[in-house]
Length: 256
Image (cartoon, rainbow, N blue to C red):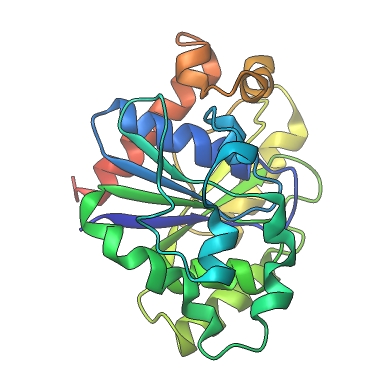
């Protein structure tokens, strides 16, 4: 049964989509079957794996609003062992359209749960908000991976995220847990970076990944080519870091 990981932080610009795309591709390169679910209306994870949002038959908007099943929405990517449930700009209106529905927090779970046995990992790229779409991801997933940028306001708003997780755990998904906290845009030469690392480790004791994601120009370039970093710049430091993260997560989930 596949492990389901939501990548969530309501703060924008912390590396959520970069992590969703490259962790998914990294696990796929290791031989794991991976499904990436893009529930961010911007659809950057979709274009980040080379899928044209305008050309897909169904998107996660159709899953939420029209009741289309997950299996009818899956698109194969050109990358090893990696499929995607693509997003579209229409998804921006989905929260309003499903707001009055019964069991609206479980729409994604009901659509995707049948796919769980087909994949080793299901990775969900959440939007930068704590609205109903993100709550759907939290109701479905086993764990949450929280990317945190190494900057002055790194922990801003994270107590709100943790409160949302606690509410979901209490009401909808008692098994949800923190997969880990990922430090992104890391520059070890800066004193500020070290201060942020210490602060994050105090806030999330024993939950911070050993792997850190460095600042790297190639990581910023790769999405414009619709290519994960390990296919775009195989030997670069961004590629090495995300492959290390993939190994760290897989090792942890094997209980090694």
